[in-house]
Structure formats: C-alpha cells, structure tokens
Amino acid sequence: MGAAEGDLPREERSGAGVRVPGARGGHHVVDARPVRAALHLIGAVREPPHSAPLLARGPGLRAAHVVLLQDLPRQLLLPPRPPPPDLERAPPRLPVLHPGRQGRHQPPDRARHPPRRQDGRQGPQPRRPQQENEALNGGGTLFVDKHPDLRVRVVHGNTLTAAVILNEIPSNTKEVFLTGATSKLGRAIALYLCRKKIRVVMLTMSSERFLKIQREAPAEFQQYLVQVTKYQAAQNCKTWLVGKWLSPREQRWAPPGTHFHQFVVPPIIGFRRDCTYGKLAAMRLPKDVQGLGSCEYSMERGVVHACHAGGVVHFLEGWEHHEVGALDVDRIDVVWKAALKHGLTPV
Figure 1 (cartoon, rainbow, N blue to C red):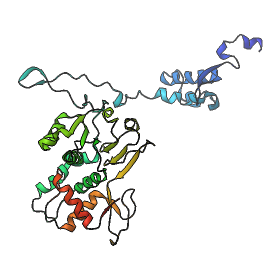
Figure 2: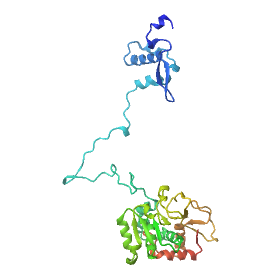
Figure 3: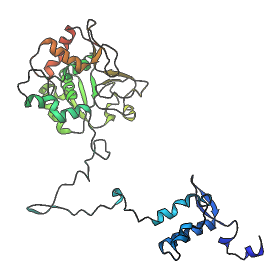
C-alpha cells in the first residue's frame, strides 16, 4: 500500500469493503466505493445539487460490485407501500349491548370465539359426509316434503348398509364399541343390537343425543346402551364399529385381536398389525347382471356400496314408500332378506 493511499480514509482505500447480505444467506464483502457512490446518487436524486444531464450519466457503477444492492435505489425512491390488509391492526371492538337490555353483553361472536371441538382442539367441529347430508337435506326428507307428488321414490339405502354391518358381527358377541354412535347409522345399529341383549358402548360427548336414542329403545333393553366419552373405555372390547374416523393414536386403545367394522368414509388406515380391518359395507350383484362398465371407489367389478344396492332392492321389490330420514330399525331384517332373495350377496 502506498503512502498516498495509506493517508486515505479506510472506506476509500483499495480493497476496503462492506459486508452485505448474500443471496444464499451469510454475507459477502464488496467494494465500499460503488456502494457509497450509489448512496450519494440516491441523495442527489432526492435533493439534486447537480444538473439532470450529470445525474443521467451516473457514477459508472459496475453491477458486479453492488451485488444485491443493485435494486436499492429503485426501492428507496418508491413511495412507501401500505401494509397488507392481514397485517393491519384490527380496530378495537367495543361490547355491543342488547337493545332494551342495558348492561348485558351480547353472546360471544362465533367468528372470533369458535366453539370448542369435542376433541379439545380449536376451530369448528368437522363433519362427516353423512352428517353433512343430514344437516343439508335431513337425509332426503327435504325433497319429499317440498315435492309431495313425486312419481319417483327417494331412497338413501342406508337400511341395507346397517343390515350388512350387523350381519358381519359374530352371533356370540356380547359387547361392541360404537363410534359415530349418534349418527343415522350409529343410532340404528345401537337400537338393533340392544334388542339382541348386546351391550353397546357408545362414544359420544352429547348426553342429550345419547339419552334421546336410549329412550327410543324398549324399557327392558335400555340398560344395554352405555355412554362413554373416551376411547380408554373400550380397551377390553374386541369388536369396534367405526362410524367416525380413527387416528393411529386412537386405535392404540383397542386390545390385540380387535376387528374394526367400518361405516366411515374414507376408511381408516390399517395401523395395527395385531388387529383386523373390515371394508366398507358392500354387496355383490348377481352374476346375470349386464352392462357394468365401471367400478365403484376401490371395489372390484360387480361390487357396489350397500346403500346403492339398497336402492336396487327397493326398486325390485316395488316398494312405494320413500326411504328418507332416520332408519326404521324394524325394516333392517326385511331389507336384508329381500336383498338375499334377489341374489345379492355380502362381500
């Protein structure tokens, strides 16, 4: 380094540099002089002490020296951008009083304070597809009530679905564990099994819905319906009727040798190697059926969901009633025998 260069300030010496952020993290050392020139250019444009032609020529910067600072002048000269809407602080919300009820607050806003889910997590309680149908159209009752003169029969087919599930259960079973117990299918399965003097352990958080189902059972069979709120209550039961999706963690409470009967969509994952998993309720069509050009879901050709088979049986029998709404427990055996009579067989 020469004597003349040694007298210069450090930022103007040859090789002196500044550390700037790198493109892949860390920092890079670049020559300080082009950076200082860029900063002087920004100040000159904001408060120009020189003429416009002089500024137009620029200080002769080299882009390789500026690295990531090459966009710095443009960004600093732009007007400040407003913050994104999601980052703006929401205006304070004052409590609103009921009209005519001074001193009393309104119920909490559900958008800001969502109800607590049954599993203890935040957010709205997720609904299964069957629950969505019941909430939207009452299991088909909406169409029948709105159009009483329909010339077609509305059939949800779940009576045959319940029949298929119930006939899969071994005859010597004394106790079952039922999830999704207050759904349309869960209710029918529970009422049917309690009449067979089978103890039904029903997993539900709603005591109101459980008591409503229990009161539908004959008085002498109500004792066979038991409400529980935790999966630990079924750690000694080897027959699980799954109407609500089970996570691997929830399946761990089942004892070895448990069989999972399923009526939940999508089916649960077979996590346990020491247990067995049934498939969705389905029936095989008779062999003389023609014109089948596709398969349903993950089923083989000629096999349909039990609810679809229920519509076929309803047509073949010529029944005039609508199969909508809650399941008629007394018709489960009737529909099952009719399906077997027409050549449909369980899978």
